[in-house]
Length: 317
Image 1: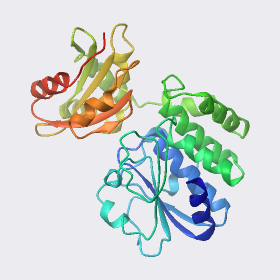
Image 2: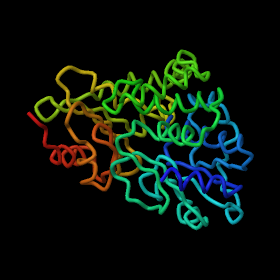
Image 3: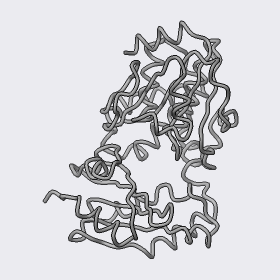
């Protein structure tokens, strides 16, 4: 399918690029790297995201050019839908974006429903950024410092700093090439992980008080209520990464972050170790993701939501 995408890039001139709501490093890094590539090839590219760019990714080359107001879509030749398992993941404008004359999906989620005729989907890839790297390599395109920085960020964040099971030989080889082309691992990591606002740390301290253990202490969970954000001055983006904290505890196989997003409505982020498939658990509630990282939404009070989630888990001995 890479050949079809290369032919499309060579044959068209104006491209629309977007990714999922609740932006992360993989989505942003992939979008910005692809946009830079197209620009270097003399093409016109616009990156649109429904949600604002999280503060810790403002350093990414090209981040300031992302638009958050939907531009007129009729003039675009094709749209790249990145890091999305389904079109609806782009947000409220999904139906309008879906009418662009040619859609291309590049993704690595096991829950991908194959919504595009032209698609590059590899569920064994560490990240969409790694797949964009493959595309650039197949194109024989020059990888400049800006592209390298964005793709390294994409791969770094979706592998949990190269700690997750999705980190393979090709992943590390790609990262090595990107460092050789100008990506600075220390500078990138400092911007992502070491420039948190004080409100985020205050939120973390508060949320840690909600730490609980269930399912024979195999599941560790944290809960973020809307009042926690209000009273600490934190933003929703400041909850990113909190789900990883319980997983670091010895004996915990699954960590869950329950985030209140509305009246009697919670988003649940899941992380796991080893063979525990949290994508299967999330799918019970209409969610999805990867074996070791997934998410879903459940309605009810927090006690009911926890009961339903834990009942769906079958933890291996």
